[in-house]
Structures are given as structure tokens and as C-alpha cells.
Image (cartoon, rainbow, N blue to C red; front, side):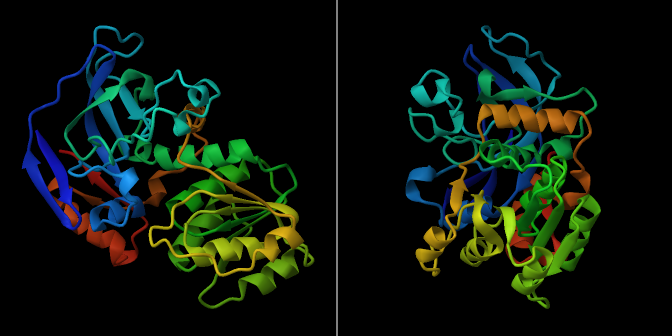
Length: 345
């Protein structure tokens, strides 16, 4: 089978590997579509923290596929099923797993696409407990975005928007645009999106944002103050991980409000805001690491019942052989890229 292998930072190749065998509690999935994101770029460039990567590795943590073989102990999953797979591998029995925090398994960090082979191989062996079954007619392309959807669902599990809230979404990338769609389901009074790319901000408006502010030519804080009578937002979702965006989130939230952090900052740059802002505003700062199993289930349910529009987020499609071009499209932001996917033949 074909597979992308990142053998070391800044060195990737498409090669032929043996098709993996499975254990009795695993399933073999034929990967169909894989989403790429900044985490894959950081993995390729060697910017991911050493304890969260294991080279050589086949990337691909956002992906969908079709079951081809099931292990002898696997029940309720059959060959031919369309599926997505939780990327964070959990044991299911430790204290955190039993408490529902499967993304923080105490056995240790283990993630498909970073420490074990991911969806940029034609076939992937995965634990059956990580698998979520999709409708028979599910789009593989759209389903590849369910990992991002699960992260947003996980964030809202911790601090759910309330009807009548004023919500600010910082960022106009795929996860932020999914957050717009999911926040809309909670009936906010006003939803404001901050970004720099006009084509993405237009999508935010289509998805339900009342205001989409282009920060390259508008003063976001002045507008937020006007829209909130200088109080700020009840809830701010930060979807980029960039230091400046986190600081923008802290400036945008009201006193006593909540900031949700969902994304990593690969550069390791520190915040420049004073600690006083957290005290003076009595901020609740809630970070989430990936998604737990319950969030994945919610993401699949929302997708299955038609609550999400994921297809408009996909801007570029590449083949497995064009992995490097796909990465370059993300890093160089070519041709107004929003979501880049690799489609297996």
C-alpha cells in the first residue's frame, strides 16, 4: 500500500509499505479522505513538542474511511461501514477514561497521525473503541472535518453558550467557521467573528455570524465595544492558537466572561498581556486538548442530522502523491486556501 512517511523533520516521502495486520480488538480501515492542518505542518517542520511526536510517522489525524476487516472480538462494526476514528487513543479503564476524559488517558499520550500511523496511509489499523459509524451515504470529504467539529463540541461541553449570549469567535479558519455553525445552535443574541480573509469572513456571515470584522482594515475592539455597550462578549472562542489572537480574545471578553482556547501555538511564543487582565476581569480561561469520546459522538450526530455545512470549507484537493504541494498550499496560503484535503484514489 502507499503511505506518506515523515522520517524526520522536513523530510517526507511517499513509499510502499505492507498492509497492516490487525489484533482481535482492532479494525482495518481503508482511508478515503484526509484533512491537513497547521498541526501537520508543525509535525513536518519539527516544531511539535518532542513528547507529542514519534518519528518516523505517517501523518493524518483528521480523516474518514471505510472498514474492510474487523477483528474476531469486534462487534457492531461491519466491513463496508463508513467511519471516522478518534485520533487520541485511550485505554478506556484509567481514572480519566472512566470519568469521560478519554482525551487525557493516564496511560500516556498516543495519537493517530503523530505517534502511530494515520490516514495518509491507504490502510490503517485502529482500536475498534475509537471508531464512530457514519450514515451509509455520508460524504467522506465532509466527514474528514469531524475531528475539528469534535474539538469545538468538546470546548462547548466545558462552557456551553447560553441563549441570548454575545459570542465572539477569534479566527476565520476551518475550526472557527465550524464554531460559528455550532454556536448558532445555542441561539446567541449576537455573534461576531474576527479574521483577516474576506472570503472566509463571507462564509462566517453565511453560517450565521451577525458581524464579521476584517481586522486588516477595521478596529475590532472599537466595533466590539460599540456592539456590546462597552461590556464585551459573554463567551469568546479562540480558534487559531496564535498569541495575538489569544490576547485579542482576552480584550474582547466581558468581566466575568469565559475564553475558550482550542488550538496549539507551535512557535511557543509567550503572551505579552499582563497577568492583571485575568484578575481585573475575573476571567475564566478554559483550554481543551483535542476531543473526548462524548464530543466525537456529538460531532457525528450533528453531521448525521444535517446541522453542519462542511463542504463549503474545503477549498483544495490533492492526491497522496502531491502531499508536499498540499503542505505548501497551507504554509504559503496559496489560492485562498481554507481547508486542504488529500483524497485517496
